[in-house]
Image (cartoon, rainbow over all chains, first blue to last red):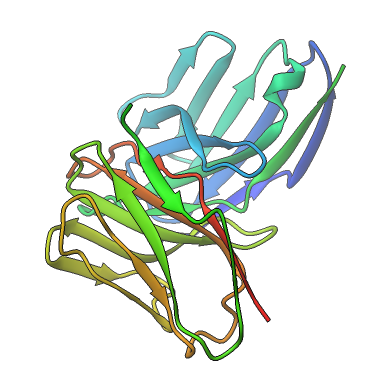
Length: 112
Length: 113
């Protein structure tokens, strides 16, 4: 089955710097890759997603890139702000029933 | 105000007792999911349901049971057979289909002593 690995597990940056989180997946048939942000005590919220027919997608300060050949995808956050501090999860989905495999999460801390 | 609600936010039970976690959505979604979240681990799928009166086991279904009698509701029962039930439980819903956004509830933190 699909296995998703996520790195790093923790990331600390200064406000205004960029943050990059990387994920790899094992099943080449995976075709949908969402990123979720989870704040303390809350459920995850989708922040951006990408499909396998697209190499890059951007939404303001957030971008995601996908390399199908290497089976990895990355989240890029530019001009980080303290409110970006949270746990970020990547996921990969293949099956008809939309069940996803999640990475272990990255705790991002943005220092003011 | 549409969304997913989970109640209660915190739940405490004694070992050997079954406990049911509530999940309700008013998004008119056909599909619903239950995940378990442990520290340092990603979300792991317990059960999912694509339509009323139908549900499928996920990766870690042992010790759990669900029902889907109504479109809006997908309760999860943590039975006494679950060896390590203390965890954060998340419910999600989505429209039917593959590669669609899942909307998550706020979660229930279950502590069993």
